[in-house]
Each structure stands twice: as C-alpha cells, then as structure tokens.
Image (cartoon, rainbow, N blue to C red; front, side, top):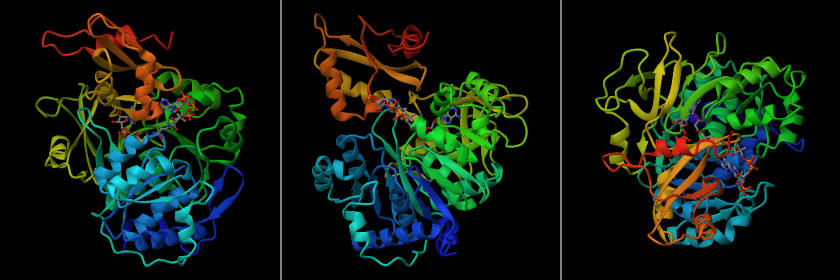
Length: 504
Ligand code: MLC
Ligand code: AMP
C-alpha cells in the first residue's frame, strides 16, 4: 500500500458515485466528486511549495471543502492542522508560528485580521469559504482532478492537533496515519458501521470527535454523512428521520431533551447515538432512554489518543461509565505519585497504551517525556476506576481543565491574562456546573489593596485575546483566595462555593 491512510479511507472510493455527503440544503456530493476536489486541493498545496511533512493550518467554516483539505493532505503526505473557528488572531498566530505551517487557509471574513499573522509567520494566506469560493478554491479549479498519491508509512504524521497545557502554551499532538487508521478500523467493528449507515454530523471538523471519529468511520465503512454546518436544533430535528446514527457531545443530548419535538417516533429508526468528549450525566442517559427507548453509547477519548474505551454495542451500556478498553488498547489505573498499578476498584490516574496513542508533542520532547512513558503508556490526566465488571468510570481530573460544551479550556491561559489586568492582584479560574455546557468558566479575582478592578474592561480585554467559549461567564471579586498550608490555591473550595451560580 502506497499511503495507508489515504488508500484505506479515501482511495478505496475512487470512481464511487455513491453519495458521501448530504448537506443541510439538500445538495449531495458523491465520493468520486469529493475525491476529485481533494486531488485538486492536493495539486494546489503542492504548487504552493508544500511537500510531504509540511504543515497546512486551516481555520475555515465547516463545509465539504474543509473536509476535502484533510483528504488532500492525506493524499500529498502533508500534515493537516485544523483550527477552531472561534480562535482569535492572537491564538491563531501561536499555532502557525509554533507549527511552522507554510500555508494558512481562512474564510474571506477573516482575511484582514489574519494578514499580519500570516506575514509575520512567513505563511502563505489563502481563502476558502463554505460556499466553495475563495482564492484557494479558484486555484484548485485550474488543477487536474487526479493527483499522484504520495508514498507514506503508518508512522508518518498525518495531523497536528493542538491541545492546551496546564502550565504553558498549547502543544501540538502529532497523530500518525497508523493512529488514525487503527482507531477507525476498531470503531467500525465495535459500533457496527456499514455502508448503509447515514451519520447525522453536527459536530465541528476541527477536533478529534467530528473530524476523526465521525468522518473516518464513515469513510472506512463507505456510508453517508448528513453534514450540517453546526448544531442547529431545527435542522437536527428535521434531519434525524433521515439518519441511522448520530455522534455528539453531551450538550447535544441535553438540548434535544429540552425540545418537545424530540420524540420516540422521530428517532424510531435510529440504531445508535454516541456521546463523548465530556461527561454524560447518568441522569441524561436515563432521561434519554425514557424519552426515546434508546440507550446512548458513551465512549472516552482524547486528542492525543483518539478513542480509548467504549460501552458495548451489544450488552449493557452502563450509565455514568465509559465502558471497556477498545480492542488493542490497554488501560490501567495507577498511583499518580508512584506510577504503580492500583488494585481493581481504587481510584487513580488513567493511563492508556495502544496503536491509537499519538507519537508525541510537536517539538516539545520534554513535554512528551512527561506524559508519554517509555513503555508507551500515555498519562491522560484523567482520574478513574474500574468497577467489578470491568467498566471504566471517570471520576475526576488530575489536570486543571474545564470542559465546556465539549471544548477544553485551560484555566492557566485565562489566569495569565487576568493577572496582567489593571488592579488585579491575582486570580483563579474555575469550572462550575452549567445546565447547557456541562461546565462553564468563572473567574475569581482579588483586587490590589484599596483598588476596584473594572470588570467590563477586563472582559473586553480578554475578548481581544481569547476565543469566545473561553470567556468567563462571570468575574467575581473576593477578598482573598483560599489556600492550603503550602500556599496552594484551593480551587475545589472555590468550585464548591460557586457550584450553584448557574444551576439550582
Ligand atoms: C459556543 N459558545 C460556547 C460554546 N460554544 N461557550 C462555552 N462553551 C462552548 N462549547 C458560546 C458562543 O460563542 C455564544 O457566545 C454562546 O456560547 C452561545 O452560543 P450557542 O449558539 O448557544 O452555541 P452553539 O454555537 O450552539 O455551540 C454550542 C455547541 C458547540 C455545544 C453546539 O460548542 C459545539 O459544537 N461543541 C462541540 C465541541 C466538540 O466537538 N468537542 C470535541 C473535542 S474532541 P455569545 O456569548 O456570543 O452568545 C475531544 C476528544 C473526544 O474532546 O473524546 O471526543
Ligand atoms: P481533548 O483534549 O479535547 O481531546 O479532551 C479530552 C478530555 O475530554 C479527556 O481527557 C477527558 O477529560 C474528557 N472526556 C472525553 N470523553 C469523555 C467522557 N466520555 N466522559 C468524561 N470525560 C471525557
């Protein structure tokens, strides 16, 4: 095989006129047409001077074109670097600089704000809009609809996905062809995907869940996706009767349960709902079953590892658990201090090993060494325990992380900005329960003696640097932060104090 990822996921469909994508407006795109577009994109990237191993950073709205850039990268052996469309130019600048991306693709609407970024990073800037227009798409039309697939190995990096760190800036997780492929193969089997499946796809395509889990599985199985630009309730309700499966973050399911149109008859033909990226409350699982008769299948994954565990397709899907290790993936619970395996039932650090586990962080060998053991186990930063039947329960996190609507937010990044604000002595950013997003961001700040920080000015300054979903929903001034005897801020105590800000 010349290029395992491309040949297996994409190349197998060349000349296949079956529908791959159905869009919200009723238009469809066949596998063959999708591949012709990808080949043209690969041609453009090559003409722009990129060769195997080079990075292309992509901050574009969800569209078939956006997904075809991923296919084009796979075909040309180029490293795909997708970016959240909510990121500010400041944030994008870091990713382009750090990755050394040679091309940055953006929507026309972001062209002005990213021109300086691209220039300062030495990257070529091209546009791609969700209606198929833009300079990159114009160039593509001048290229042939075939492209000679670049030779790659399973160990070659296919994608660089940035994930924030608890102490410093974001780290680029290097995912190899083998990581992506092995996980897709396992999941197709485990969740019994076939060419008859139609997946309702309302997730973004810049994160593992919507990009790899949903899309790679569909490609491998040869099924279809109803490819919505995002989670808009009316569209989801309208399209559910046309789908057989759906994947989502818990917010999707709580939102659906809040809509009276979401009924048992509406989903009578659905064979599978998958949830992940954030904890699904056992209560949501139970309400979903009561309403629809379907039991959501919850699974557990990470940017660095793809999917690690899953509740069974056949057999009991146990609410509040993330099921069993996937075939080929080993999961152990260890003592956070010693790394020793703990007896069954005890709570400890979740470590995972397998072909799904990433190769390391881009140009950060010391970070890689901290989290990826020499024997291949990745220290996830999640805390868990196995119950007596072997189901994994995630009970907490050993990392200072907030997950809001499936997006990860690292408090440190916000605290660093807050601490620089006028009249702010110090800050602590915490996650508190939220009915829609699961958790949301609250900033607790201490003022300099005798001063009163201007909260509106602080919020406005933060919005210049950070994506909207990271903004504190509340900024609260307190006289002092709770500390333990070692002087460490006790975030748990703050979380308890503000636990009911958004929920009764
Ligand atoms: C949007 N907003 C959010 C937010 N999403 N705020 C906090 N957390 C979020 N997740 C902001 C908007 O900017 C807006 O701001 C306000 O909240 C309300 O917007 P909305 O229209 O209600 O939100 P919506 O666009 O519907 O988005 C919500 C969502 C979306 C849940 C549909 O966030 C989403 O698609 N999440 C999926 C994330 C995901 O794919 N995660 C997978 C990571 S991979 P304002 O104030 O301007 O109105 C991974 C590995 C694994 O974790 O295991 O899968
Ligand atoms: P990310 O870095 O965005 O890939 O997020 C990965 C993190 O999401 C994991 O380390 C977990 O903390 C969390 N996560 C993913 N799936 C689940 C799940 N089913 N239940 C609880 N947490 C989850």
